[in-house]
Image (cartoon, rainbow, N blue to C red):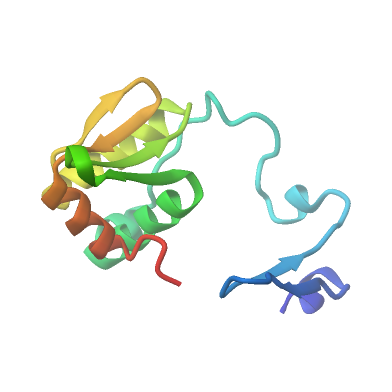
Length: 135
């Protein structure tokens, strides 16, 4: 499909020690060709498409993509500290994550550039729901 759209073949490589494949393509003005704005996104206002909002499963998949890109989990068993973080400097993206977590029944809070879940049961439930880091 990439070769058909861009007229050139991508470089494909397997990541050693991981169940992952990298597909790379370099092309001048690729963002214009895909109609994706380039440059800083700090102040860009993100909006979830309505067709995603209408379907709970799509919302979960949307959040999974955001967490896979900008999320992390911290578990410290000796102190029973559980944290699921979404970290991003864009306020509209943080608000989307915050609002959709509430919609899914979680109780997130915001700390600086993080949207966090801090209750052990919620962290475990959200990780399972999003299939976070399950490849």
